[in-house]
Amino acid sequence: MLILGIITGLCYLACTVWLIANLYNKKIIQNKPNKGILGLTFLALSAHAFILYSTLITPLGLNISFANSFSLVAWFMVFLYLIVEIRKPAETLGFFIFPIACIAIFLQLYQSDTVTLIARSFELQLHILLSLLAYGLLAIAAVQSILLLIQTHYLKNKHPGGFIRSLPPLQSMETLLFQVIQIGFILLTLALLSGLIFLDNIFAQHLLHKTVLSMIAWLLFAILLWGRWHFGWRGKKAINFTLGGFIFLMLSYFGTKIVLEIILDKV
Image (cartoon, rainbow, N blue to C red; front, side):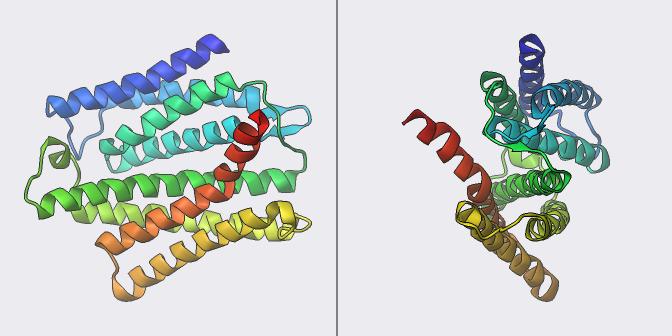
């Protein structure tokens, strides 16, 4: 498992280096996917899935440790990137996603024996998987908004460098951003509803902070989509709402897990 994990991490790292080399050599083509990177990504994704299966699934249920959760979200991000790249090539997303996946796989190998929460019931497993899938999608939206922020800044200052030239047109970037947010918002809504239905008391003390932060994130994304629909919000306003909602969403789950599993565990 260790060797497979190292190979997987190196594949993600190789994809990152390949993208950088393509950018440096001006070989990034906006309307045509890179078959070599797609093939390497699929290989890494398959090996990553095998590692996840062996560490996440136990005879008692799902092992939802911080490392496993982070790795699963990273896997979702790479999988969604692969789908997006096939349909609407956007290789520049890989500059952020592949390093995240590389870190996630090595962290999972480092903490492979950590068990903090076992999700036994199907209802709880469904709630957790919906939540993590929503996190993965909205994480891609956050990455997309960062790229939009960089692109907008350089275009306004009339200094479009090689990286900026590799990005799709601004309108295409915004269209993809809101498509991802819409799907992520639906999944986040389903995740919150499943928590309200299946969890005994979603407002219990140990869940209150997660619930409140998640609802704030949901509200921010709801306001953004409403503003887009009624007022055509775009640009900096869309970027701010996206990043704000993502930050609250990450604090609701991963922020808590970092404190409980990594910081307090070492005190």
